[in-house]
Length: 188
Image 1 (cartoon, rainbow, N blue to C red):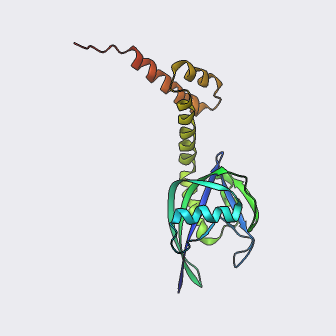
Image 2 (cartoon, rainbow, N blue to C red):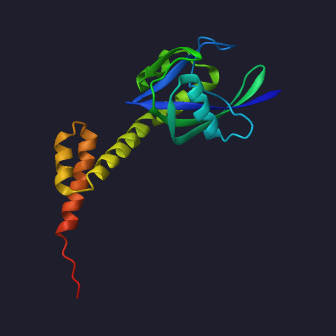
Image 3 (tube, rainbow, N blue to C red):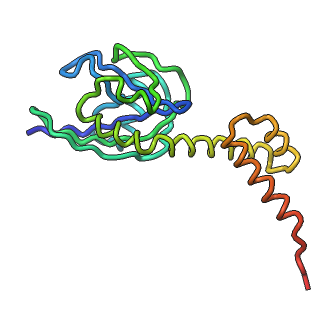
């Protein structure tokens, strides 16, 4: 029996995941995570970046390996490597799909998934909140870096921040700097 080696992108944005509806083939009109076959000489990551460019005309950044899925279909065996991703540039255009939706964790069961992708949905139900937190922490770390971790600039950033979680992280960073600035080192 034929084995297909493919990759899939779990694209995150604002606490939601991009689901695409197949516009062709055996699973037409079922929902999936976009991606495709790995070509000879490609790494999984290279294949995923190429496939998403071909299918959605966007550049992605792979942020994390998510999971491997193996699934036995009646006519082939599927091996699928799934990666958490974000869109680096562009807006998704449906070049091979006939629909797309950004789904929150609570909406993941609202679409009819291709059978192999159901395992990725289960993974998301367990980890989506964690990925969202990591994305927020990464974004906030970049913002603090732009401030050069200057105490006054961090306090200004704190005042402008509306997200409660991000405010807590900023507060912890500000207190850490204030405490380290107050420590007197005995140099004797």
